[in-house]
Image 1 (tube, helix red, strand yellow):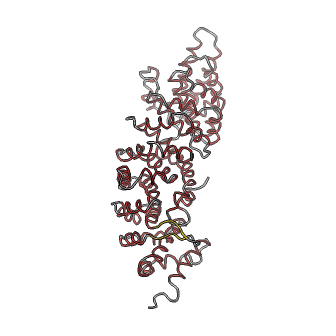
Image 2 (cartoon, helix red, strand yellow; image 1 turned 60 degrees about the horizontal axis):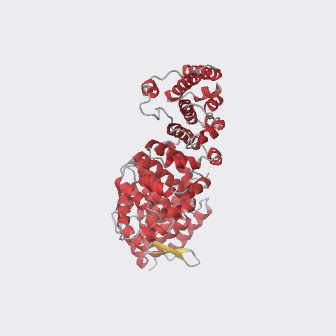
Image 3 (cartoon, rainbow, N blue to C red; image 1 turned 90 degrees about the vertical axis):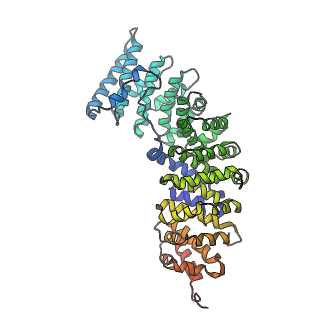
Length: 522
């Protein structure tokens, strides 16, 4: 798996220039991979334990939160779980007229144990042989209540570790089958939850679920007018399509009415549903070129911009920003035909990004900068719009004061504001001198010199690239003096004997060219 560093290099290219859009696909795909970890640890869990019943006013689900307060010793909990699995086994072998009820009661007891602790006894249940019993309980013709309890148990086992999740392979075809239209809404939703947990584990399991036909019925469930069903299905879908293999994303975008459904749900008042659907857009826009082409030509972008402006929810703003960044990076149609300078939507987008840059949330700032750097890689009019807005003083301040990863994103944005397309055989980009002068006078140069001193090679490279712009393009040959004044020579000379040949050559070439024997001679 490529690192986030590699992804950023792919996006921003070998020099700071406006050809970012042409090289963005790899970064979008790498971010789709890396966001899984971010989402799991910081934003929305990739797996979710089911503690409450999906059925409103379900007497059997009441009191569960009260039970959770008392966490037993793990050994006691494991012993109770093993005994309950044996009771389930006995109930399934019972032939009397109340056999189904006995099975349901045993399943309910097991489900409560698997829902009860912060560390559910899933391993104990598996070791005692629960999985084949649950598969038996999921068989066609079983009572809805039995199916619901069995799927609930599977859901919470699938919320465990990799080996526990993979132990559920025999249950997957039945879970997929119970997503069908003949199943009750509650059973289908619980099965979708279980499949979402499985899909959240790894690419191998996502591929298996895709091959077993999970995509279409999950999409159908996302069309539901019932909020919880649509939310669960959208979350499961986002786990299923999140790659890195784009096959599922490409297939999803071909399903009839999917874009209309996405837009409808993004406009709903149900914020939880909006969040889940926004994650679907994230992965579609990261992995599927076909999806990008259709999304940018729909109303998705205006709807996302509206959400960006009006929402204060971190959990919603993150996928909204990531989706916008992916779409703007991937298709010049947006900057040329949607985000036209002078249009309300463009001003609204910039206003929303400024709001995020003023936020205290590090991740939010970084995502906003990802969007802004791609706008700055657009037309001269877009660069001028950014330069004339209140965002530039914010960026210059962040370049010196923000955490390291944020400063790197700021550098890409400021660099893109100053350059046009590359021209000529030397692959050097045209400098927009007025923009460069305004940024240097605004105080950005010390921040770029500090980047050159960074141990991170990508950051140092961006810093060197900006110093090259200043030394080559600042009017009246003043660039080298400005760089020297900020101790830029010392910063560059640290690469004189550096092990990285590219950085060594780049820094030495700049020092020799601009600070050679004739430097300072009038």
